[in-house]
Length: 410
Ligand code: FAD
Image (cartoon, rainbow, N blue to C red; front, side, top):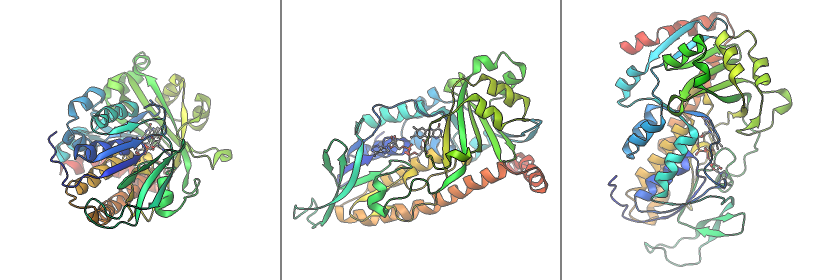
């Protein structure tokens, strides 16, 4: 896309090539900034399962010229629907056409690996993405050179040190290194890894749609093209098609085993039997879906308060999960990280001198913190709402969800 270059070009290091880091690399690289991304993983991998692309992300991907590629990897659901856990009875449904009419672009579902690859290809064209490059620490070094490019004296300059000892200096370091961020240490000090661990974890599995089509009930589920959420006491299950309709993504969110309360990971090994034990008495379709699970891993959920300080004025800034991890109940984790990247790039599109950087970074925080706090609270509330015990609150919830479609019509 034809993006006018920024008046002043910065040397930027991004720690982490997740969806947030790659979005930042793409946007900032296109502005002419000299961007290097350091990613710990050996290569872009397929870890992860389904991920939602809500309209706020679709709009960004369209703006970045990636609509055709997105459509090639995505599934466009027809509705979001909510069901009871035991009978599977439909509680409410929201037609995605209404979402599209309201926001101007569709909601999609994708495999995280596909979206990640798409973003990596796009970022590679304008940035240097180094894999197998784990950052050991981000440091603020005394700056020896008397004058910067815009003739101002700078006392400190950020650098990243890799585990192999290489050091890279830059004007700006962006910490997009996720929940266990090392960049965060220089901005606000270390965060104990177990702080904010939620009482739940989510078993994730992908089952082949071909197998589902052999069963009449599951076939109906596939053909409905819904993002379906079964809600029950202390647990929920979300299912939807991904990978161009070849696979069905399942997320089983339920209490974490007591002996595992402090482990923080995306991919703790799990089993079909562990899932089955959590969903006794649930809808027959859930039992059949569990039968189809061959491999599964468990994601330890984190509900950490938003980090107070996101910026160090010497030129270090955080984005995405590094500063605002989200529970998965709002489908906005990747969305918030990618929005952060877009906002940061929009501000750095007009930078005229290095002296403006601290103020622009503060503006980024002012713009993003309230929105991310709001979305974090929505995700939390959705989780509470999905997991209500049967009783008056659940009856109210079901009435509200039953009325959602009509409310959208007004
Ligand atoms: P992340 O996506 O966590 O990316 C952070 C990146 O930084 C990672 O690539 C990591 O390897 C890298 N990194 C960390 N530390 C260092 C370091 N010291 N040096 C260099 N690189 C470093 N969400 C879902 O909804 N569904 C899923 O199936 C799903 N699977 C996931 C699988 C993985 C492996 C990861 C990392 C995340 C997954 N997520 C999933 C989470 C989701 O992608 C993020 O919550 C969201 O996209 C926010 O992204 P982020 O860029 O802030 O952080």
